[in-house]
Length: 68
Image (cartoon, rainbow, N blue to C red; front, side, top):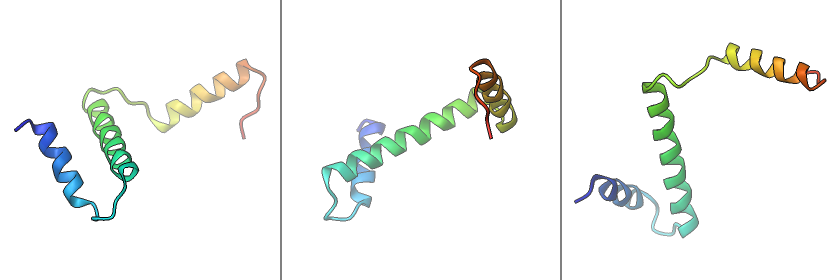
């Protein structure tokens, strides 16, 4: 069986019997976002908190906004 299909089946089986389709969709969405984040880390596509803060400060200054 396809590994993705197996993972989805395991996820669904881990949910309560009274879960809704929306519950399943939410769990699949969160799972995919976590996996995408892990891939980004593995590939070095991350920025430190300090880098993000500096970029936000630069953007705010450029647009005449004050960041608190």
